[in-house]
Image (cartoon, rainbow, N blue to C red; front, side, top):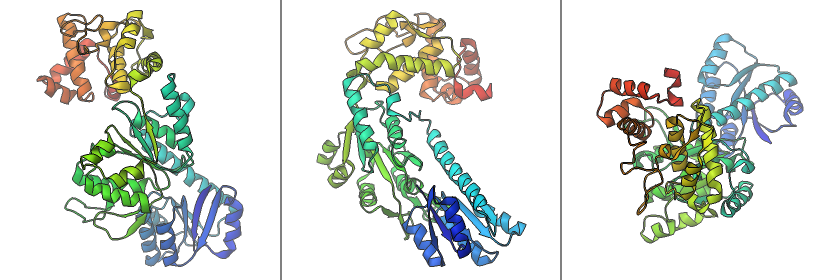
Amino acid sequence: MYTILAYAIPEESHDIMRTALDERAKTVFCSGKNNLLGEISGNEYDLVYLFTGNSKADVALLEKVYQRIPHTPIILVSGDENPEAVVTALKIGAFDYLGYPVSASRFEVATSKAFEHKALRHEIAYLRHKQDIVYHFSDVIAFSPGMKQVLKSLEKFAKTDSTILITGATGTGKSFLSGTVHYNSPRKQKPFIKINCANIPEDLLESELFGHERGAFTSAEKLRIGRFEQASGGTLFLDEIGEISLGLQTKLLRVLEEKCFERVGGNKTIYADVRVIAATNKDLPEQIEKGKFREDLYYRINVLPIRLPDLRERRQCLLPLAQYFLNKYATSLSSDVRGFTDKALEQIQQYSWPGNIRQLANTIERAVILEDDDLIDTPNLSLPAEKGSKQPGETQIHGINGSLIGQEKELILNALEECLWVQKNAAEKLGVSPRALNYKVKKFGITHPNWRKHR
């Protein structure tokens, strides 16, 4: 059930609000500036109604409330519908503005819009991380006994609020499954925020996690809301937690134990009700022995441990995953490729996939781009030789078909993939001009979904 805070709403409207909202939300009424600020500091609300006038004090109060809960919709209720006052309130950050008195139906409509807006924003935030969404565990491809057991455990874990630690090699799907856990938890209507601790410089990671006050350091020109604050009420996924410095580990331990923190450069204690899912490809007990990871933090995040098996440990999943990625990329690239030759299927099954699911996905994407027929064959899988072996259909130089044209096309594809399909960066890597690379891209018919809007 949603929670709503109603500040200074006249008593004659309390019953109207209860009638309109009680079936879908719990409404808390309060009055007094200090009570309001105490409520939003110590509790998580999905929506705030503020009864205000047109005074400077009311404008200042709105600014203060918005600064503290920038991700919570705020609806103003006022008997003064001065156009300038409405514009000012909306510029500050109010979600809506209702003229008093307000009918039950108007309360209901405004509340519904606010909740829909908040849910949509959470969904967009999730999609922006370019993470495929699988909302149901039953839709996750799992045919091996080990992977079935993993999903069975995660489905149970999702129903709790306890911290989950997902371990496993790079590319096994830790980030992917964290989203499935969130969307099957009681927090699914609240934010799902991800942060990769290895991708952010150590001196900036604290600000990313906890936010900072304006002027906290040289480049802090305005207040920044950290990931813990953004995720309040929802789930925070800490990827590569083993990369966090010992000093930051101490602060993280406090947040997990006390549910509170201070922004960098600030002294106000902020409370955030966040469910944490952590992931790492490192052996944390070994890191503890080396003095690189706090033992108390390890026990705090290792409440519900889960290990994802390597792809070579789940052979029954290989071909279904390969077909899934083929369908996905054939659709996004508008390709006619629909399957694999028998030799390609055999090579996929025999290969050890050291890069796990991520390597399989990249391999299939490249093969779909390269393949001119409707079935992917072994040359276009372009799998690197494993130690002490030579892959079927693979030449000594790992060319596409042994021809100079084929080798050139593969070289370009390798550079584009390593540069995340940014042609300018790929051209620099290849030592050619962007114009020359663009000519080759058109010549070989190379395309990618990210380029569509530019072509």
